[in-house]
Each structure stands twice: as C-alpha cells, then as structure tokens.
Length: 480
Image: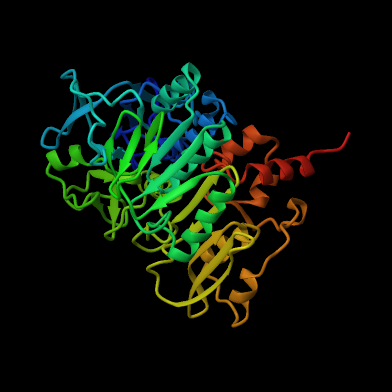
C-alpha cells in the first residue's frame, strides 16, 4: 500500500498487486488491519454497500438496549483507511464480477480492475413464510422490522421513540433473537420469542441446555414458544400454526439468514452453502479469488460467528503478505467460538458440541440456571457448552485452543462451580477475549482501553470481555 513517489522495493508478495475487497464488515476490516500490519505492498480497495464505515454488528443489540452509542461500534473510521493508503468506498455495490477481464462491475457501470479479489460479503436475511409481512408495494409492514444492520437498528429505535410498543414478538430463538429480546425487555417492552425448532439456540445447544436457557428467560420476564411457527401477521399481532394469536405492536425478524453468494454464483465460482475455499481461503474455482467470513465455506462448513471470521481474516492477511507459518492448510476451521451477549444471559459455545465425537461430561443445575458440557476425546476438549455461569470460560477456551491433554479427573473439575478469578490473579497467558484470542498479558501491555482495542481488538467482538479488560487496565495503571 505504497503511495505515489514511494521508493522502489524488492519484488515480494503483493508487490504492485491490485487487491479489491468486496464487503466492508467485520471480516473485511480485520483483513485490512492484517494487511497494514504485515506490510502488504499492493494497492487495496474496499467496497461496501452500506454508508457506514466498518462497525461491530455483534453489539447492535447493545445500541438497541441503550448501553452503547451507535458511533461506539465503529471499528475503523474512514480517516484510518486514508492514513494507511486504503481506498474505502462506502455506499457502493458490486453488481458483477468479470473474471476474464479481472474487473468488478459496479451498479453504476464503473469497473474496478483487480489482480486479486476477496469476497467478504457476509450473510443476508431471508424472510420467513409469514403471510402479511410484505405489503403490496413490496415493503415490510410498518410493524415489522428486520435486525441485521445499523440502519435496521436505527429504524427500530425510531419506532420505539415514536410510540412505545406495549408488546413485541421476536421471530427466531437464535443468538440474535435472544439479544434483541433482552434489549427490548430492558427497555420495558413485554417481549415473547417464537422458535420453530424444539428448543432455543438449537444450532448450538442441545435440548438440556436450551431448557435451562428458556427457564432463565422466563425468570427475566420473557415468554418463549418453541416447536411452533408464525404463519400470519394479523391486525393484532402474529398467529401461530397451533392457532394461538400473540398480540404484538412490534414484530422483529431474526430467523433465517444465508451466506451472500449471488456474486460468486454469477461469476461461476463453486458455491454450495457458501463460497467453497481451501486452507488458504482461495476459491477452489479461481486461485485469484478468496472468501472469508459468513460467505465462505471451508470443509463443508459455514460459521456465522465473529471469532472464525477474524481468524480467517488473519490467515488470509498472512497469505497475502507472505508471512505464512506452519504446514498447509493455514486455516483448519478448528476455532469456532460463539458468545451470547445479552443482559442477564450468559452462553458460550466452543466448537460443535452436538456433533463432536468423544466422551460427554456434563453438569446441569436447573435451580441455579446453569448447564455445562465438555466433549473430550483422548483427553482433549473437542467442544464445550457453558450456560448461566462463565467463570471457567477463559480456562476452558485456553485448553480447547491449545488442545491440552487433560488428566482423567480434570474434565469433571472444570465443570464444578468456580469463584471467578480476580483479574489481578489471572496469569498472562490466560485468554480473556474469546473473539480475538487475546490474553491477559496482551491487555496488561496496553496503556488504556483505546490502545487495547487498536492493538488487540479485544472488546470489539461480542463485548463480553470488557469488564475484565477494564479491571486489568485499572490494576496495571500506576498509582498516584
């Protein structure tokens, strides 16, 4: 990313290369940070169809809740891109990819030439089959809101400000649905959740954990309907397929989403659920094209979470700058971490606990609202679920990432209730940010929260580590 008049340098990875990144979300932002840090020597253009600079989508529910300002979600402002020689184009959409010419065709007909291209197009919402959602003019009914973007969040805030809804129904009991449900409940809106599968977070949790989470929500005042589907929007609210009518002033759609792959399909790239990539995040159809984040499919899996998207971005940055380490493939898809950030709810999922092979060690306490599960194979934690008590999440995550071999009694001991470690007592190598893989020592090496965010990206993912990070900084600060 050398500017005009820069001195000549020896040829190397990316030298003189024109790189175009399609998408300006969390994965794209992380990739560009890695390219800057790694000294990428080509030109970089980032094209995003939203008008906003890259921001943290995970914390949109915190804006809805009122605990965060919208501008606090910005990951890198446009001035940062300018300082580092990156051409950031916002409010611009790519219509087609001309692989033969090596050009991205914009909706206005302009063409962006590229030698290498990265698809970071994320996921797009899909409308559930509910009659009456869409009006004759093609727009959503005024009481219905999607919740995927900052503009969606602002529209909902405007609706809340214009008239305080008495009741809201959330369609979808996944991570996003529960975050929105809690945010609205915190604002004083009576909230109900409708989930078509047998239990909440069915994509990440088993039925036992889902039942604990449902009871937790009930204690917090949110009713949950599982195993039923909304079929019709009525004048009064939503009708379910069991004939029950739920009164609602506000209906929020959080169920249904899929990788955004239309560009890749039209360009003739191999697409299954996502754009199929190898260990270096290259399209298996065209080694000049890469895909990362929600739109990428690696070894038959798409993820939908920030931690693997950031890991992919880091791997691709090393590939493009030539800083490769370890044997191929560079990305193995091991580190899948999901966290639920919502007031009064604590959930962490590592790996794929419902499909991982191994012996299952689990402990549940419905009275306290806790559930813990480890899947262990040959002493190694292959997956884990923690609901209601995350006091051991840092240690479990560290053991999971390092593939530490545990003794026979250790899995059970990890699941026993533990007093949360005081931040000052945390060893430097203990992970405190699961999204970005940041240790306590890395946080202690920073001077303030802004430096933590800039250097390590801790607190900029799900936000669950912010309390520990602030305490570590306070304890490291000089006295007097």
